[in-house]
Image 1 (cartoon, rainbow, N blue to C red):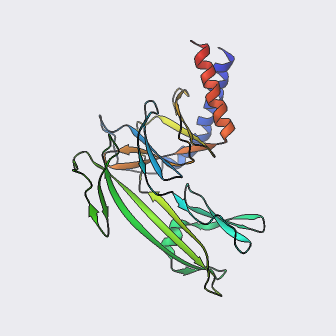
Image 2 (image 1 turned 180 degrees about the horizontal axis):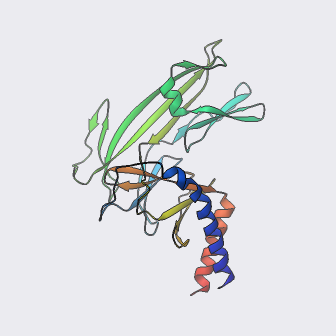
Image 3 (image 1 turned 90 degrees about the vertical axis):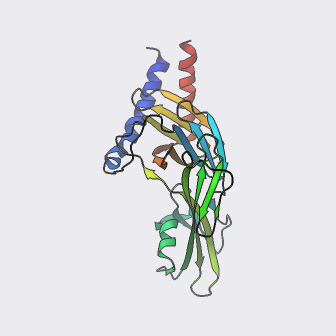
Length: 275
């Protein structure tokens, strides 16, 4: 066995064994979803810029792209010696103050559900959320219908038998100083509604993404072979499997950019040496 083959196998096997630590937790989750022959085989990747890209699960080729508002919108400047840093993956919040970073015990959706409320530090929280459903053609990504509490728009003739409905929620939070009523910070966070992928799913790929770039790696969970790689140029915040009943959330592991790129390079060396 060539050294590249051995090294690639060791690296990928380690990644798979590391990510399998979450399997015990996932096995406790239940779903009524069942895969059917001929069902849609598309991976949807949400990036921080608001784009939702459809990738062919077999080869990683980009099929189509839906452009929405950015996942996160918040002030980038530090006021009064502190600011909040939101995590685009799950909406969790961190307080940056006096060069110290502290994770808060709630995330943005939880704040919205609890608002209006007052924190122990006197901060006043006000939140709101807006839900929307949009029907998409799974083959082209074209929006055929949009449903919300305020309106229902049919953008083009929809085939109700083929359109897949995807739910998206916009969360807004504003924070006010309890003493002078001044607004100290605000954030807008967007998230998609998704089912949990069942333990008995036939989906056999594990996904790895870089911490800062838009690289995504698909690895066969049985053979540990890299099936495909794609660079989406923007930070990845969520991965879904598109099915007839909507989105099913796929787990993924976040790796350092250098680690991910080295794994790809080693795989390419192995590919060319075996030719």
